[in-house]
Image (cartoon, rainbow over all chains, first blue to last red; front, top):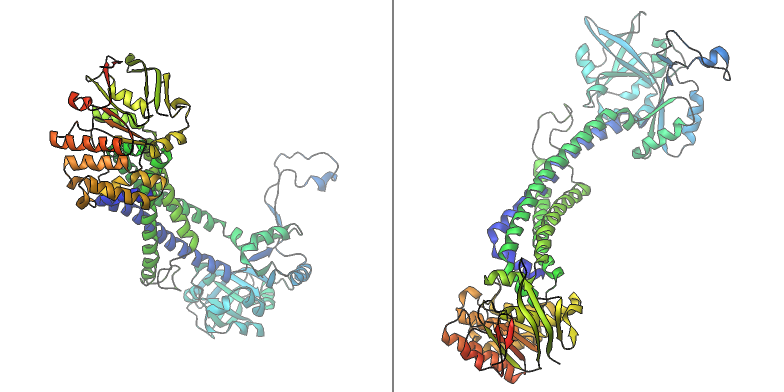
Length: 417
Length: 220
């Protein structure tokens, strides 16, 4: 049966090649487009995972509702308070209330690689006439470099120098440019209406991410002093053994305490919604190519069934069953789908290496890699094959079923007329 | 065992028009029966009913003692593949396959190709087509195409050979060759031959002749 199917395909070479090309281009386009999109995505995710903590334990955050204060007025067992103007806003403490308990918990947890207490504060940096508002993060420099890869992005100076204290900072590249400051120079740091404090730039880092590169780091004690909140922290940044378990770990910890606990993916949920839109566009655009290719097979096979009615009649008279006839025509469509998809996937795989050599100037995030990153993950190829073969199968089964329904006597009678 | 029909009636079209009316006959193993009649007399319909290609709910057809209407699709498929050979007015060769591949099509369905290839080669020799085994149908003449079709019908060494006007599209010389081949199968292999023909001369060569008039038969 399969051999006969192949003979039919070989007999109409032009149509066969055209149908094959549909699946070839469809599957190649899928793996290349997906590879570029996902390559960029993995790069972005890599940056998010490594330049920031996997889990953030932050001061709790509670939004006030109409009945949030009921207990304060009448105790827990009494009725409700009704307001002319109900309370609203956020009831919070800016600080992690019992960090010591967290340190002990994190020390014992085998899922944790490292953690660092931090205090972030919005400050005004100034140097001469240049000013910039930015976040100053106080941290333990040694554990900070264990929690994130920030130390790897230091272009000048040494991040560890912060550990010496004495009002020293590591500054992001974009912030440095705004202030026009260089290594070993001083910048003034002001919090609210307090007197500016001079900080010496001991390191400059450049991650390629604008958000990170507009921040500055100092030692925890220095930042606590500037913020006038000694011994207080507003965040514990945690690095896990397995970043994929971040949201599950964050969820389990949030049951233990009232602190706000967010994983890196929860914190960047907006980026993930963009990823979902990208996926939808990817599947829709490539899916439509596959549907067009499927229609090609459907049309050609339908015509073939009409042209081969006499063959069907004689095969049925020789004892070929409905199933055999369906198989002969279905195999043609499926064979084209398999051949076109296999060639498309191979071409896509090979071409992806060429795409990676294309220079795109400044890289996806301004700096960093300066060429396209193309993902060649197996699931992309699996998805492409699944889409193409589903389309080919669906397009083939309908004409094949039509062929199977034809009875030899109907065909012979109509041929004799 | 042979083929037996009982009160076989077939109607076609809308409004229903009777094509065959109460046909009862018995064809013995190894018999050579010709069916004649005018166009529309029901001779091809009778052949298709006798060969299991067509069916009717009015009356009964028994092949080797089995009611065709009671046979499963698998049993019918097996019968057509192993016990029946068909030759039509048109050769119905698969254009994409060579003469040999066409002849081996029934064997491809049931297996045992190597044994059937030997038989096919012998048939090609007997039919004077030895040098045309690997030709495509379009490179054969009309007579040669029909001879290949007969070889295809005989390759499984069937017990029944159903021929529907096999000489209808051939000249007199090729018609004679084709008919001789069919008769030879009947004589040598004792294949039951049921031949539908317009030609009274060919019809008379059968051991038994059935003449259909308006769906009913008269034995001359």
